[in-house]
Amino acid sequence: MPPDVASQDASLPPAAPPPGVIETSYDFAAELLSKLGGSNFHCGWWDSPADPRSLAEAQDHMTGKAIAELAVGPGDKVLDLGCGMGVPALRIARETGADVLGVSVVPSHIEEATRHAAREGLADKVRFEVADAHHLACPEASFDAVVAIESLGHMDRPVVLPLLARALKPGGRLVAYDYFLHGSASAAQQAVAEAFRGIALLSEYPRPEQIARQIADAGLDLLDFRDVTDRTATPTYARFGRIFREEVVPALAAAYSEEFLQGFLDLFAGSDACGGPHHYTQWTARRPALSGATVDSPG
Image 1 (cartoon, rainbow, N blue to C red):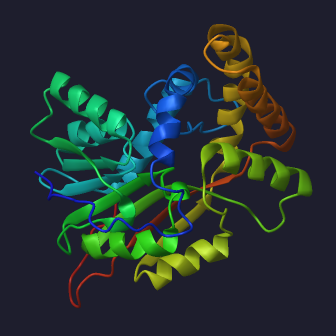
Image 2 (cartoon, rainbow, N blue to C red):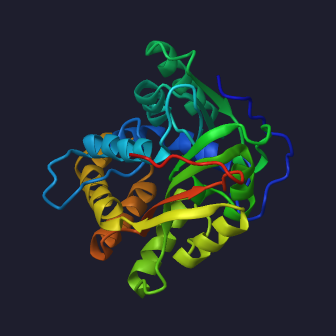
Image 3 (tube, helix red, strand yellow):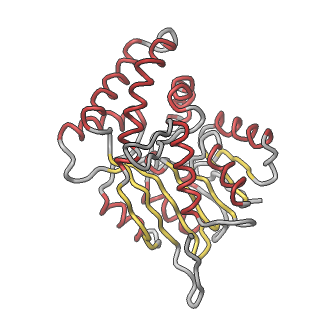
C-alpha cells in the first residue's frame, strides 16, 4: 500500500483559498457538478473536432492519457493529488497494478471514493485520505509518480511543487493537467477567465514561463509542456454550457437561487464566445535520477 500522508501545520499559504472554502463549495454544488460531469471532475479529451466521444467518454480518454504519461506498473506507488471521488485513481490501479493513494480536502469525496474502492474490490490497492497538499507529510521518495488533474489550480504552486518533488523517488514523474493563460489572451478572455477563477476558487492563472520556472525552482526537470486547449477546455466547456442550459437549470431551479444559476449561464455564454474560459496544458516533469541511474520512458 502507499505510504501515509498526513496534514500537519494548520497555517495556509495566502495564495490558497481560506480553510474550509474548497470543501464547503464542493458540497454546496455537489448536485450541480454531478449533473454537469458525473463523478469525473475534469475536462474531457477529444483527439480532433470530428471525435465522436461523449463528454463521459472523453473524460475517461483524458484519464487514459494521464496513465500513459505516468509510466507506472505493478507494485509502483502513485499519489493522486486532488482525487475527487476516486475515478482516475481506481482506473490507474486497475489498469497498471500500481498502489494508489488519493488525497483531497473534501471529506465527502474521500468517503465516496473509499466506498467506490470497496465496491470494485480494490481496497487493498487504492486508499483515500483527507489531506491538504500544502502540508504533505510523507517520507521523502515515497512515490514513483504523482498525478494532478486540475488540482494545482486550487493551490499555491510554489509551496506545493517542492513538496511533490520531495515525495517523488529519483526518476519519478509528476503529470499535471492545469489551467493557464497566454500573455496574448484578449481582454474578453481575461474577463471570462477571472469570472471562472472566482467561481472555481482558483489561484492566479500562471503564464507558461511561470509554470516552467516554478517547476525548475522545485527541483524538477520539465519533460513536456503542451497547450491542449483545443482538445480539452474548448470542447468541454461548450458541452458544459449546453448541459447547464438544457438540463441543470430546469432540474435544479428550486435547489439554487436564480442569481447563482444566472452567474453560471453568463459564464458559459462568455466562455462560448472566447473558445473557453482559460487555456489548458498537459505537462510532465521528473525528479532527476540519481547519478548513473537510468530511467525508463513511457512506451
